[in-house]
Length: 155
View 1 (tube, rainbow, N blue to C red):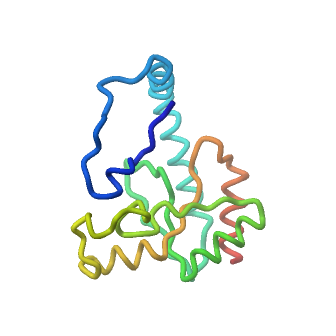
View 2: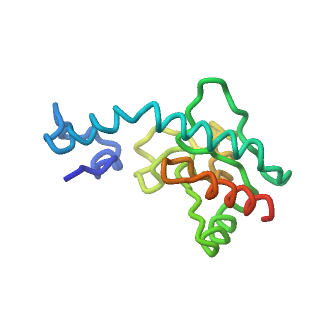
């Protein structure tokens, strides 16, 4: 029912063929319901990000600086061995994300077609290779976030 976020053509550096002018009724209804909850969802993400900012104190990790008015779709920290951190978390039933793990996304694209020159953005390349995303979604409870913070502090 829902198309892929990035089409096969786009991954090969070509322009996508089809972009619907409007959503099917069922998806439009879902989108309207979600828009009605937007303020609640955003406040929740801010609250979880603030909790992480206060509770995480592992000096081997780099936390983002909180910015007034920012909504943290993901709370991205930088770690020396991000894959190891994600595996250790998964072993404790904590799912940490890797959404920003490359400077150019998604990682399975035809890289030559992007026009990006490797090494031209060394900070982005370094940060993306070290990024780990902590959950902030509406299903992440305060208890969940405290457990995530405790885990990364003890990692």
